[in-house]
Length: 436
Image 1 (tube, helix red, strand yellow):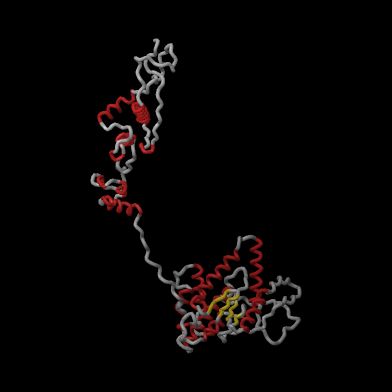
Image 2: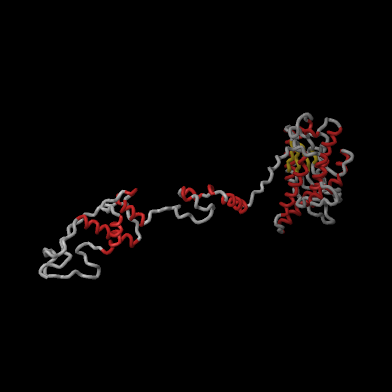
């Protein structure tokens, strides 16, 4: 069942093409043999139903009715498509809105502003739409129904749907010399007669319609022309004329709500062009260099402008060993450290000789102190060197550790954080011992 909406009559042909083409594609399936047999049975069943259709009458059919040996062929434009014989019902809903007032806007009334008045033009357009729908339905062996909110129209549609679903199969061929058999009756008979006059309850069963009946409804309608236009739309070949959709658009103009136009296309600048442009602009402005945040104000004059390049030497001015030694000896902000001499000349000479000075009583590495008869704890003679004082020993140790740090290139902590190593008097003598 294909449902159309009378509030949008301009979309009838387009929607029919969409759904009928889908039915044809779906019934083809995978092309297996079982499917081809099923398609052939369905086509024979629907063709038999179309050829043996009779209008319902009040008189009951005789019980001894048998199959007739002569069957009339199908008329022109009848059952040319729908090769699988699928029962199709085209239902146009909201048919009661066709006769609404012509003052209503499009989309609210059935024909909207297309209806100029309940006169000749209004009838011609509505009858033309019905003729087009009947011509298309005839090609697929389909039926056409109009429904409204009245329950009786829906009841008629329900009865015909059951009648089409339980369509009896086509009988087997009758061999010569045998008596014809009685036809198999439909368990859901359809007792309503066709109706093409009342626009709110149109009933066109499959098998009743023909090109002649369609043309009689309104003069000037060419069913063959519309049939050929439909074929051109399906084949997508408009070389010989317009298709059915184009012809239908002249009959029923599109009055639907148009979608808003798309915004203008935004063509962005290529990435490399954008970066090159900004690089050239920033290279000409020294204040746009991001390295300026890491420089001293005095270095900005000497630094060259640019975005990409090595950082300046003063960008990350980390403390070095030389700087740490200088601050340790001179003190931070020029205040001398504890134990450092105030005379620069003495400090320089002592720093030079500092690696050569060793604490008293310590022998160089790899040598041994001279042995004497006295033990290490014996008092030294009067000619031996006296132990250095506490201040001199502290300076010697300080110079010794400074030489170690300078040779290994290690950072020395500030003097404020260094603890003073307590000195002990050297009890051993560095010279010759008594009794030598």
